[in-house]
Image (cartoon, rainbow, N blue to C red):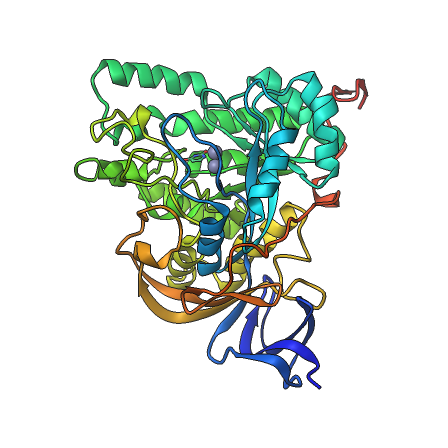
Length: 484
Ligand code: DUC
Ligand code: ZN
Ligand code: ZN
């Protein structure tokens, strides 16, 4: 009788700490053995000449979220999870959003229903747009207790943004409840001042999206939210750090010993302001926030990754279609940049683009690649060691990777609901060939191998990494109203 449900044989297993040639034995979706010459499994997968990586953990994905006006998120959980699987990602964290002036609990329940179509495992961040005492004191505690252990706030975007006073209340609530706060940090009033001036000057083409939010907009706000988090001794993650100056703010906070973490995204490592200036309306495909920056910023971000300042590279997958009445052209081909929905598809391309630009081009090593795409995000969001590594006892979420395979990215490879990829025509070296979620092959040779569904919700228990330090900058603890 076979000892294992499945054996992945003859591969080179890579984790954030080691590279080892060994087989992987799987029973009931869990890794139960790592070793040479394991006995036969009911299913055998030959990984000769391949790397076997922990399945990617993408902790910033907008899936089937309601959008503004005629615009629509181009993915369902069916298509988004297909693109995750095709790109070697086996866990996503996406967003259940409180409607402004509305309740969150109903939205969370409805989002759980939608997510049942996911092929990959998933967890939710809770977006707070209206942090009233009722929300923070009554609605939120049971939701966090049920495993939604991260909150997101926006400091910009009409309809989503919170004031500094509200942000402080969210930070205080998160500290009490044991949740991590993730922050979209851009200075709203400054953006609006720039916006009004640009529109008044008749500067409306897609490239002016870059002008409306220069680096100072993000740098100031990154500094501000870190200061607020420091004052309340509340751990935070800064989302989508786009360039050198914000990374420097994060590094300064970390050097002071603060629990401040940061992510960046492949688009900030590969795209620049020039992409928003492509001919015609093409630049709209590259409208996302914060905006793409310079090649010097890209090098600074790689350096921040190597230094450990930025420990997580997520996709910020936020797909719109380009064509059609609900996508980038929803307001026409001459629409001002202010009317173009923000975001781009990136779930499927996150790992290949990062591997190619990072590992294949020698900017980072394999261990760093695994750390920033799987292990660190799993740790930061309370999913490790079940997710984010290959170890006995971990879920058998695996990506079998061909490090030599050369692929020209084209949209039809990606399985998402968008009709474009910002990386169309990009040549990459290194590609996922087979993806397993808890021992089940979900994508093989670019073909999706399972029907929608099968993914599981990952409730996240309290975990020590995001416990407050117990250190305040003054003699008073303003969260609990007692001496520090
Ligand atoms: N920026 C965000 O903050 N969220 C989704 C899309 C985007 O570009
Ligand atoms: Zn954001
Ligand atoms: Zn986002």
